[in-house]
Image (cartoon, rainbow, N blue to C red; front, side, top):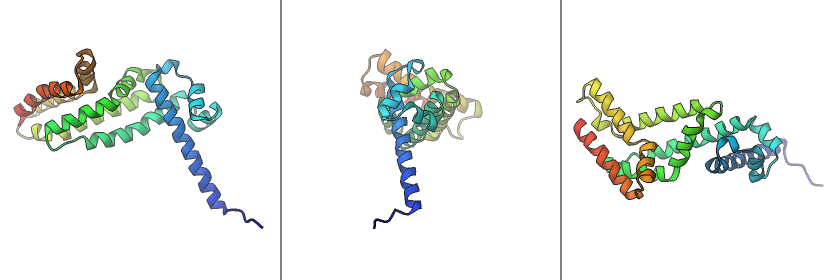
Length: 200
């Protein structure tokens, strides 16, 4: 006689399956979001990509904005880890890692900022991302933003560093300017290094 698996095992297996389904839905949402304007993005397409029903998506995430917020929140945690790892031993190595990071994620980040107003909850995430960027710049280039500067100059210098290292600056150089990743990195260095030297 075949024994049934213990109830706790069955519950764990169900929870793990539900978690995998949720991850699949979020992955499908991110792929669609990268390619389609938010206002034209359909849950039917996301569900089909994830091989689930729309009802499953709604049961898990509540709505299209709810799914987008969940997807961005998951990516925010993952990308924050990548940004933390992008702090190098020198400003040059940090810039190199930052350009690599934007090559992988910059377009999606800028899309999120541009379309944030279309979905409840996303403007707050965009504000968190901007605050994280400021904090990252402050820590990554702390040596040039230290006690040798008075408060007014330090605040101005940080604002300049934040602007140079922003995804929008990368996009202007890379796409509007038609520069290669290597040329973009060099252009950013030419903007950033004199600022850091003047604060050292």
